[in-house]
Image (cartoon, rainbow, N blue to C red; front, side):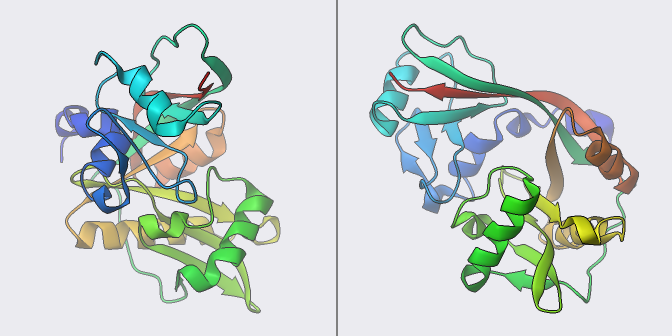
Length: 232
């Protein structure tokens, strides 16, 4: 896989839409212009194109008055009456041939029975949005010590040919032991076993995580703005 091939992969410029119209179509709610995940799965919204006439009306109809949405990978002009509630800068990273994946014997697969433990770990470590049923988006794994879930990672968006690794979280007392790297490499191994390639997102300010992912074999593809907007 060459850098040119990575750069030309347009589905990564609009991953939520391509996920909701592809691998996650069974989770999608909405119409031809706008789709969303169930409220307890993910806050992300998929928009076919911000240039489409009527796209903001379609969002308002889908979400309802006063609802808040998260816009990612785009920076559209917000119409009058719509309130921007927050803004963040992120980065998108993609695998390179340097990524040497491997399954991990210690990891356990996580699901509905582990939802409370996953939510508690996310609350303690704040890796990004994770809701009561986010686990239905893909394969989630974790490491337990003395029965306690102390580290986790999993799959989130699935644009065609790619799978996002997300919710990488490790409790403070268990950091610097390589658990996060092991989890990422296990998730990436199973992604590649399916024939997909791995991508990740991180806050631009989280330079420590970005450096760690680059050492594993990921590289920066693009900057990704994230914006919260409230429907009038």
